[in-house]
Length: 127
Image 1 (tube, rainbow, N blue to C red):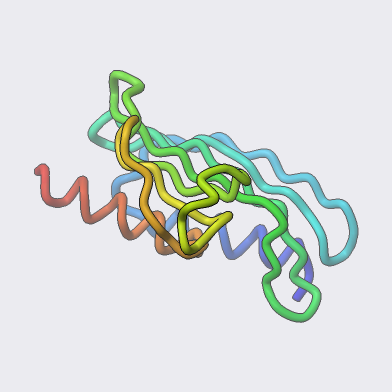
Image 2 (cartoon, rainbow, N blue to C red; image 1 turned 90 degrees about the vertical axis):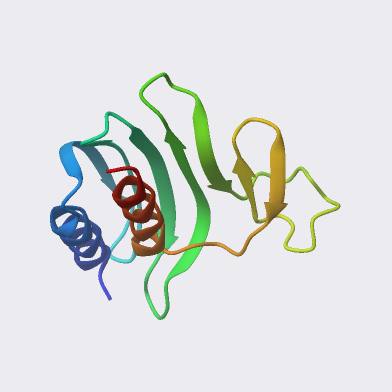
């Protein structure tokens, strides 16, 4: 896969999410297969997602770095997936999930579409 195709896949997933009302994306193509995509997505309930992915998609999707930071309209953390090398006690280290500001749990690295699905489920439950 080419990095431009991966970027298009992410953009398509964003376009398919009925709860997104505004997007801001930055794509940094480092080579034919390596790149960074980051952005901010704004949802109908005024929550937002800040995310970054640094990926190599030459043979498989190899994620070098990611963070998906989802917060409510008051900028209070709802959840964040990341792979910052702290919380060494977590079995999935370095991958983990922050729930609100005081709870860290085991979590595998999610795909971007899974994060959007999780957010959609949360918004759908609240409407």
